[in-house]
Amino acid sequence: MKNKTVLFVCTGNTCRSVMAQALFQKFKEDLFPELNYQADSAGIAASNNTSPSREAVFCLAKQGIDITTHQPKAVNNQLLKGAIVILTMTQQQLDYLREHFPWAKHRMYLFRTFCQQMEDLKVKEIEDPYGRGLLFYEDTYKKLKKDIKKLLFYLKKVGNNE
Image (tube, rainbow, N blue to C red; front, top):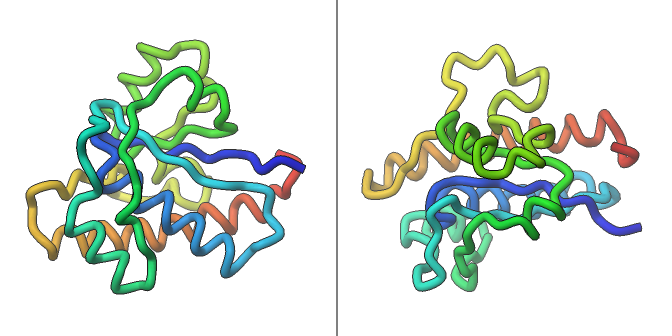
């Protein structure tokens, strides 16, 4: 059975979304290898001539995750068509995607509010850490780690039939 794709979207695909993708893959393999899901990531304003931010690389390397070969890519029709769910880091990104790709808006959600058990969060967005220093990246990593695990438990709960 082909894996279903969860697409994480941020601005440049160099920080948050690539971190979310890498954490999803790692925790899925560690916690639920039987789940028929995989992760991908993209950015609304991604450039092919960039690479993951060094702070994102550093934060994940401390956890044994290597994202140095990741090539940022822009959101496009093909990526959206291949995703069972599209999760953005901010409301502004969600609004942008819904405006520019209305045919897929029924599969687009703000990441932190996607799972019902996450709806009580006071902060519903994951802010862009770009240019804000290593401590901000580490805080972003901690939020993503917690939320990715919640997402995987949610996907496990709803089963592989979704």
